[in-house]
Length: 365
Ligand SMILES: C[S@@+](CC[C@H](N)C(=O)[O-])C[C@H]1O[C@@H](n2cnc3c(N)ncnc32)[C@H](O)[C@@H]1O
Image (cartoon, rainbow, N blue to C red; front, side, top):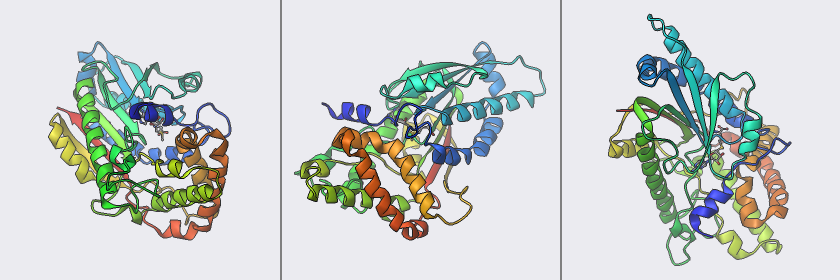
């Protein structure tokens, strides 16, 4: 199986709508995304000439959510976007006819589109289309969409950097599952992979968005120059590696399996993204900032919060583990991980969690 196929097969979130599915365990992502609502509203009202765009496109307004998963978060997000566009049109002194909204729901081919489409809100005010394929390539027609949104998806790399899996390379990431606390060469390989991926992402969106359209992105971020090991997620990745090594010592998994398992997630700094946007040349930066994704947490993180966090992570990253280690070990891996992390609640609570969500909005020139 090729590298690309591995990622395409292993990324999608846990499907269906059962108790362990992504659709039932994505409330952390929902709370995080809700922090973006106000910003998105302001951007659409202040920076998008909705009236002109709609009259140029036969009274249609096209929205795409890239990396939509199975819902319901994607439905809340597109409804918020539609409301903002409607508010923008209402505040326009000239009367306009209500546009028809068309929404493209995009995700990887193995995403559970059946669950997504069977749970589409009955009372929705838009037409819905499913678009399967990687957003690191073209997924939409040329100059067709007015707003592209993507939340919690573009930190997923298109693949694990190849050097990290190469035994003869200095970036061979032995004993670790991520670039956190890893050799400089590993950090560099992940950063370069993100650069190549984001370049392709921007190129594709530049072709798909109409002039004046908006690209709105929420993803994992980090202040420039901060080592990933300062972040709470680093404790999780280190604990994952510990759990896998413990299971290896018990003969449950092989050394080869542990050494070749890496999580293809990258947290970018605003500065890194700005350089790529400038290189692309097709967009104006309307907003670029780091936010606290846990701003909604009212009190210090407790053991129950850590357990909930792991349920969400299992629904989100579970398929990576299933693909690599097999279905039969998933519960064991996550039970051990949860026990480990619950004991580290204080450490998680005191580690850096402030500005680890990157929000940016670009306008197509
Ligand atoms: C954590 S989920 C976020 C889902 C949803 N946006 C939300 O906020 O709940 C990330 C989604 O991005 C999708 N994804 C990752 N890489 C992708 C790619 N290259 N192309 C399309 N979708 C991708 C995954 O399959 C997954 O459904």
